[in-house]
Image (tube, rainbow, N blue to C red; front, side):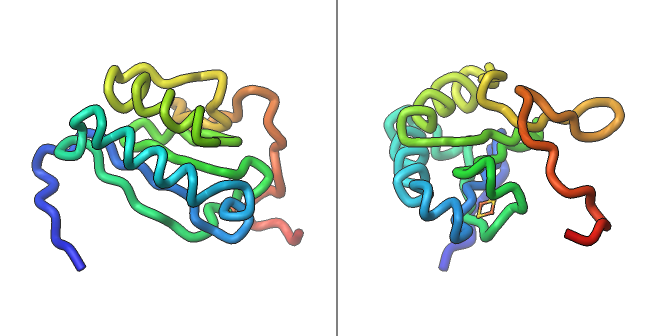
Length: 123
Ligand code: FES
């Protein structure tokens, strides 16, 4: 149990640890992100949270970065380390690996990703 002081937090990273993402390397991605954050001395500025399913299993392993609301897809250890360096340390999201980003109208689908079932529709 921990109660962190989040005063200096600049980024919040949600790392999907749902069952599909875990089959696609979710544990390795989690460790790679957390280790790279520590290596780069970013612990005071970046908070990470393991989540259950984020509802985009085809994009697994899913990682979401706030406050930008950038939804990364098909994350692996290599991509995880690159994302920490580019996005979390240098504030340069890697657009090629982002499935959804925030727009004026809401969320925008990028990179030809599978749109998925409309929210509120029967599957
Ligand atoms: S298990 Fe990660 S999006 Fe569903």
